Image (tube, rainbow, N blue to C red):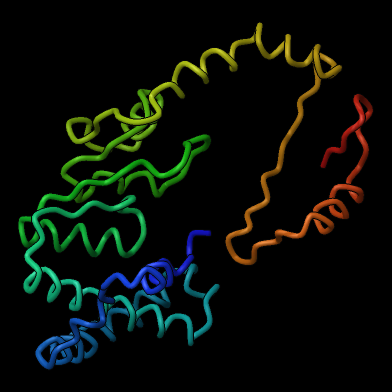
Length: 229
């Protein structure tokens, strides 16, 4: 689960850690107040220009704005106090990655990021994968070629980790292999099978009975014995 509170594990193991907000000193509070005043007008104007904000409640918008400002200045204080030699992040595509990346560049701290997931389709968020990072570690050439199409910096991307995925895609994606698999599964050559991987990020369903009920309600296939959607 992407939002799992990992600090619980640290607490159980009696390991020390700090939240960004633990660096909320008096001078940081003052910076936050000044930033709120300076940015509130710009934020309101932007909110009315972009249709995406209409999908969030006013409460959510306010919480998001407040969190961004607090996290930015607390992270800045963290860098000043702890003086890290390097940042390593999963990626720089979300707001934390962007905040860390911007401050790492501002404070001249090296910033290393990793590939997030497999890239099967187009996603505009790919454009920021090397916006701030000094090095972006990828799984294979296929991923690198995808990110290059989104104008990510070629000189920042290095291959590491699951590089065998490139060869696996070529092997199992060939027409001969696809035909062979269809034959083994009794799928007509002119038919396709679409697999829906249901995202459980916002409410995990771990009970097997629920998934069985979901599967039983789907339309039976005309080949084999499974179900399709």
